[in-house]
Amino acid sequence: MATNKTSTRRKARKTGKANGHATDKQIAGKSKLELINVSKSYGEDWEREEVLVNLDLEIQPGKLTAVVGPSGCGKSALVNLIAGFEHPDSGQVLLDGKPVTGPGRDRMVVFQESALIPWQTAYQNVIFGPQLRGDMSAAQMKEEADKLFETVGLVEFKHKYPLQLSGGMQRRAELARALINQPKVMIMDEPFRGLDAMSRELMQEFFLRIFEKNRRTNIFVTSEIEEAIFLADRLVVLSNKPTRVRSVIDIDLERPRTFEMLSSAKAYEYKREAMEILHEEALKNFKSSGSQSDFVEAFSARNE
Amino acid sequence: MTDAIQSAHDTTIVVAKRSKLRKLADNKTLWRGIASIILFILFWEVSSQSKVWFGIQVPFIGKVPPPSAVLENWVEVVQRPGYWQSWYLSFMRVFFGFIVAMIVGIPFGMALAVNRYFRDIFFPPFEVLRPIPPLAWVPASIIFWPTTELSIAFVTFLGAFFTIVINVLGGARTIDVQYLRAAQSMGASQWDLFRRIILPGTLPSIFTGAAVGMGITWEVVVAAEMISGGGQQSGGGLGFFIWSSYMGGSLAQVVVGMISIGIAGYFSSSMIRYIGYLFMPWRRIF
Ligand SMILES: Nc1ncnc2c1ncn2[C@@H]1O[C@H](COP(=O)(O)OP(=O)(O)OP(=O)(O)O)[C@@H](O)[C@H]1O
Ligand SMILES: [Mg+2]
Image 1 (spheres, each protein chain N blue to C red):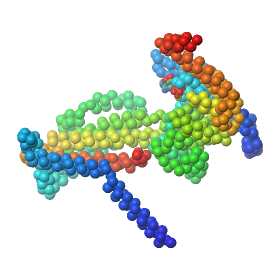
Image 2 (cartoon, chains in turn blue, green):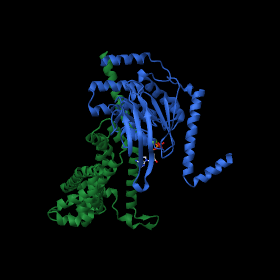
Image 3 (cartoon, chains in turn red, cyan):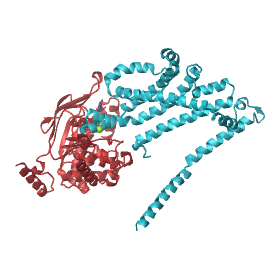
Image 4 (spheres, each protein chain N blue to C red):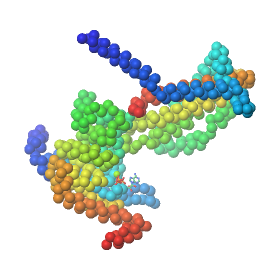
């Protein structure tokens, strides 16, 4: 029975057309992540800062959900809650209906700053997870790792230390380290921040290829709207602090994606919509911070 | 066929060897270092020979024995077993104090770093004791410990201990939390976190602490030997060697003692650096 199921799924994946939405069959078996009424604040009582407030968010299975929001609005805080590094003050994070209680290999994070372990070579970093858990034989581990190094194009750099790799290579090694654990959900926190424009584009394309191949449920936090539109099935725009979901835009562009699609009218419309919301939120930030509000008012008066 | 391979192999070895020598010969830092030492010795020789510079009497430099006199004295001193005995004694004291400080200090610093309760209890008294200079412990130490040897060892230990602990603590507490989080996601246990992240992440600080601690240990040993070395039941050591040379009025021999300590200290810190190099391959890449 079970084998029957998987074989139909595999068939579906083969015949599934590469159009905008993943077919239901492609989604089958993928994990869903939900945040229900989640609140999180930081700091001691007398200077408590509410960061996330009653935030509801559904990360749909087999889709790439991009999250954008003003700087400092709590995107990394959101990532930490989903990954289980921190716990919400109230509300729930559910993975396939089960509450998340701590970090686990079913949710792998690629961090904003490189978190490759500096005293381990790229190879040692990649096999770190299976090695810790002891859930793969040595031969299997080596095979999987070699395959991944092939995928991320770092075969010659396998035995280099992280500091010997360029920024882009580090990101790819980190991707490989996450993928070997076969997570149900991939969580990316501004993974390409700090790369130069050229390697950033290469990384985006590269990352898309990986995603479009296995369609793993994916959360991709970024501060670049173009990047978000290029990669995502759904675009979640967060509000300013205290943060909640301000808007969700379905990105209905074909897959596999190409950079040309970004110059289509549709993509332009998505971009304009998201920019408008973000701009509003950014202005709110300005206004709420006292002395600067005069400046903003004066500025908008001049523009009228 | 095999011969050809063999000979090709031999040539590569020769080339490799030659290039290594070549590298050494091309090493500008090395040559500059040698040149500066020679220049320094020359300057010292000239200035201590001529007590009058440009018509002005130079009282200080005139009293320092020239390198030639120091060397002459040294040649004579190395034939005495007492000199080597001094080396041996000082080295034993330094290493004893240092090793005990490492053995006690590293786990203590780690415990302070990883356990909040341990830190709350032990950090305050540690911080009160830390600013006390090791030499201020000498009288108390002599009264407390039954032998002079033990009291020297104790003071030496203190000199390295505080530095090592504070470095280990600082190093372990500044490990990027992302490494710990990444490891946790992948299923690391507490013990895994300690062994694979915290310990290797603290190694650079441990070696920094060790290098600084080693320097302090030499300072302390020499001073402690000068203070207590004259007693009947113990004595000796390079510190005492300098002191007795001074009492005996041989200035050249004082300088011999000083340079000996310089060499001993250099040797000790080189050893620490080398061990650090072996332990931390990821830091060899630059
Ligand atoms: N551990 C913490 N302790 C105290 N305050 C925190 C902590 N983590 C986050 N914050 C606060 O929460 C807010 C959101 O931080 P967060 O890092 O999640 O923002 P972000 O959206 O990821 O920003 P960026 O775009 O710069 O990455 C900030 O105001 C920050 O000061
Ligand atoms: Mg962030």
